[in-house]
Image 1 (tube, rainbow, N blue to C red):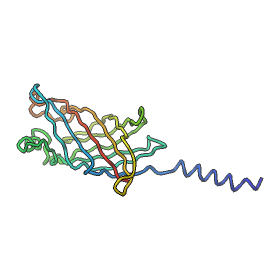
Image 2 (image 1 turned 120 degrees about the horizontal axis):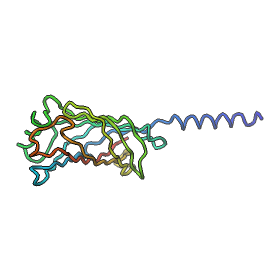
Image 3 (image 1 turned 135 degrees about the horizontal axis):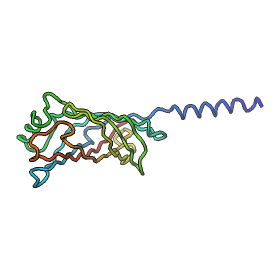
Image 4 (image 1 turned 90 degrees about the horizontal axis):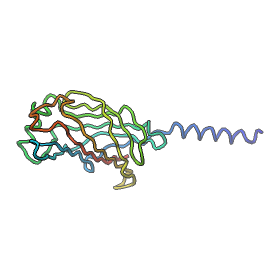
Length: 188
């Protein structure tokens, strides 16, 4: 019986180590990431823009998705619609009010496994000084080694309402619903 004692200890150690394995941490690479938004204009068409230089980090635990975390920050001064006057107006108190609310932040509060490569991420979105809990689908697009580091690619598409964040400037000329398309690569 004593012969099996070291083996049993090893099995328990391996089982404990696998249960306490830390999630892999990733930092968002702004060069390989994009935040695109789409909003209605005058009930005639849509305007697209982007918010450059996304920042943040996330963790991925393949064994237990509930341990995954996501944080994201955007600088309002990085709004870019390829039209200087419109960008300045978007940064004004009529819209984002970049001086008073310089960042847009998201921090996950819960994550669960979705279908296929999707995660269902719930978190707090702070925009224009208002924090709301939102639920977004996050797809793990791919994973692998590239440019000397291990990377994971994520993508999400979701819609928010400006009015939920007390952004009512130029309604109804500017639509209430904003579609966001976010794709990031994280570097381990």
